[in-house]
Length: 111
Image (cartoon, rainbow, N blue to C red):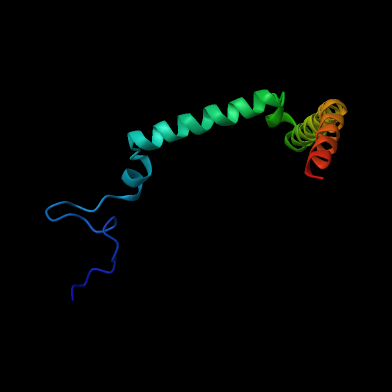
């Protein structure tokens, strides 16, 4: 066994290479990380825009702005549910009588 405490391949220095210091590890950023941060930032930005949240206002009044955003989300969901119920009822006015008529015709044919 060696005297090396670390068992992780990421922590062990490669042969002939000095171990990297804290600052070097902190500031070594891979391109994949940068791209992931850009993608996540764009998605979060789109969500903020969708719910009309001003990012500058988040710095001023985080919890108030967050509460307003949650309120808008609830209003949006309830409004969508209300419209869905209205569309269901409008469709049911046409579909249910046709379905009943077809059931009646089917019941007469079987006898």
